[in-house]
Image 1 (cartoon, rainbow, N blue to C red):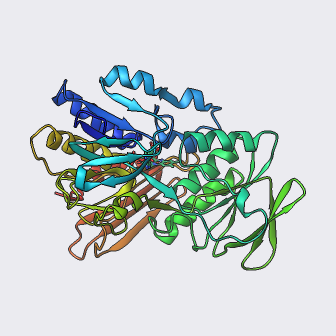
Image 2: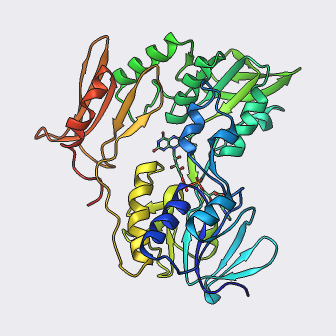
Image 3: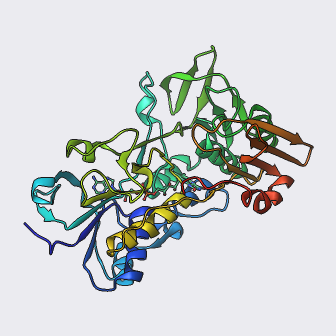
Length: 385
Ligand SMILES: Cc1cc2nc3c(=O)[nH]c(=O)nc-3n(C[C@H](O)[C@H](O)[C@H](O)COP(=O)(O)OP(=O)(O)OC[C@H]3O[C@@H](n4cnc5c(N)ncnc54)[C@H](O)[C@@H]3O)c2cc1C
């Protein structure tokens, strides 16, 4: 058994590193170890869907290597170190090479996997997705000298890539089962506004449709559409949603639901094990975005430093990185009751989600209307008090 019973964080993404950074502000000395199955470097993941048009290489996006992070935060970072199991009876982790590493407090910051559609055909294995810096590297290689890209999924990440790839000069087709893009976040008229802006930079939409087969045809891929017809592509990029990484916790007998179940202290039912970021379900909410991670990290760092602090979420608007249609959305909380009230002109789109009494519970702003962000955000209730 190795380790000095330190705080062990599994995952070197935004969640893992932000907890470590916040903890160091409160405690300069206690040993902290970060284990990561990837390279362990720090980078901004949101940049990945906005980097092709500006020619950003993976090396430019990588902010600090694992070695730099080790120096900067005075901790131990072990890249390419996958955790295979949590042995709660001995408060230790089983690593891929068989080593057992003890922990005093364990933080699971495991992220989420991209959902893979059950596609048939001999080209299904060639469908890409971008969920980390290595994936982005592979996408850039795959796009080299190519022209036509089909994106599966017109959610946040699919729309952002569509905009980025179109502006970078690729012919982009976007396929989604829903009737309009960002269907979970926008009312229909908002989806139509976004769609027309993306069409104006060359994106072709195939809505209320899906792909069931991907077959190789020479160097290219042919996608068979559910509604008939087919599309040819050099590269197929899937962006149909995320699935929190829960298996490690589940196999250790820790409660999971959509994500690893934690309370507002970010604590699982095992008082020495915490979870945050894309893998966690915090008091019933799975919010795979940057802002919840920042708030949760500060609270968890205080808790780890000996001052139990519940995570609180204010209203947290999400900036959709579609420069052809600047968009800011603050979605109503799960279960919120109300209706969208829409005003629109050719320069902008504003949708306010209000309850019966007229209180603002969420909004979607596009184009010129995005300048109302601050005024509207100040009227929103907090997401988790
Ligand atoms: C293309 C893209 C664009 C986005 N844009 C935005 C945006 O504009 N705004 C916004 O708010 N959010 C955005 N997001 C979401 C945001 O980036 C994520 O919410 C955030 O980065 C998640 O951080 P994380 O640390 O929870 O997970 P991750 O960054 O996925 O980190 C998980 C870490 O866990 C490690 N790991 C997993 N399993 C193991 C194991 N068994 N053993 C060891 N290590 C393990 C992984 O190697 C990795 O280091 C975007 C996401 C993507 C993919």
